[in-house]
Length: 110
Image (cartoon, helix red, strand yellow):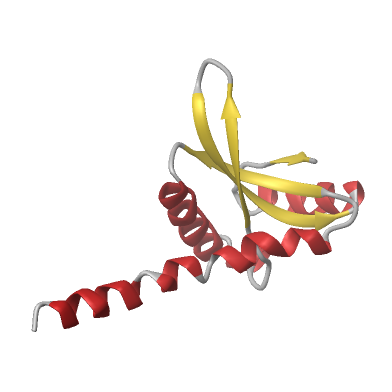
């Protein structure tokens, strides 16, 4: 009987893995510009930041996908960047301006 709850717990795990295709979506971002809105030391923290910020700033972020990028920063360690695919540099700057006007903090990256 204890094996069944373990299987149930394992089936709960892929729910988190389901966020992985969202991070694969930036392949559809040929210009490669992003609006970065957070950076966290863990992937879980980065996902939690996205959940909080996309809810808080839904007027700007609603319907947009997220790209959580792992970055090894020399002297600081591994961080997970919370980025929103934004098309061209101009589109990324416009999105960041709207996000800042709503009270958020961001910058454009490639």
